Image 1 (cartoon, rainbow, N blue to C red):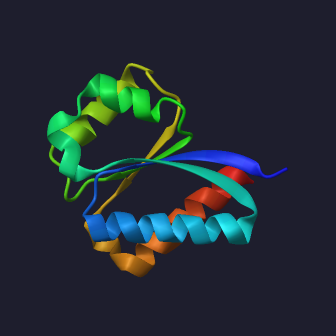
Image 2: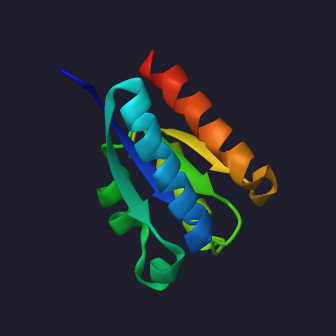
Length: 116
């Protein structure tokens, strides 16, 4: 039976989020793990509040938080929820400076480290 890992992807430019999702799906195949992806996109920021974000990420073990292309509210909400211990997942902040290849390497490194 494959290990299951819940991953949150929060924010990011749509292209960046798509690259992250594709990289995670490839990793799912190569590492033999089952991923459950939860996405909170920038286009829905205005409708996101702390309760809604918490409800979506409460079961995520890893949360990739794209700092760029996100309004300040979403990263702040996620950090506040973590400080209040509203979820146990590990937050991994991602900046735009990684580039596509760097993003894929960082995702793989964190997934592999977590699943071992």
